[in-house]
Image (tube, rainbow, N blue to C red; front, side, top):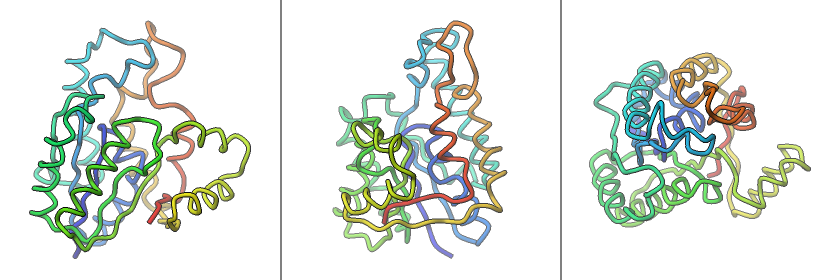
Length: 232
């Protein structure tokens, strides 16, 4: 049995990035912990929603969604950590977050750690990457690092419009100096989908917002496949 820690910059990233792998690891007898770095309160800002729900209401909603999603994946509530840092302010609270992450990793001593890759579009994702790597370095942890992708920053995401996925990831492996690792989640894809559906606030259409949910179709298309991809 291994201890595994998954870092989610916002509630829903853990499912999008590695929900199938989480379910598979738990089914195999491993112990999985999830650390939610921010509260996700501004998760509807990009689609123009500022009220109904407002940011404070959304913060509470997303925590409840995270608890439900984790339960469906098979996690116990006591294995979830909420740092409750305000969404989009992780860079400002980097030292505080690093201290918390060091304490968590030092206590759990995981054999494997999952977190976002370096070239993510969202700054909270990139800062999470930095914090986790720095915590591992400070502790001298002997752990396998798995980096998942949600949405690539400019100009890398443009390559996905011109290249097939296999070619794109081959190029990015060379660019990042890493190898690609695939996890077959075909037996757990429906569990992942059910867990993702718990994040209804991010999947619904709002009549007073733009014509798409907060989680874009392109992200869902990439996430809901029979395998999950990691850089190692």
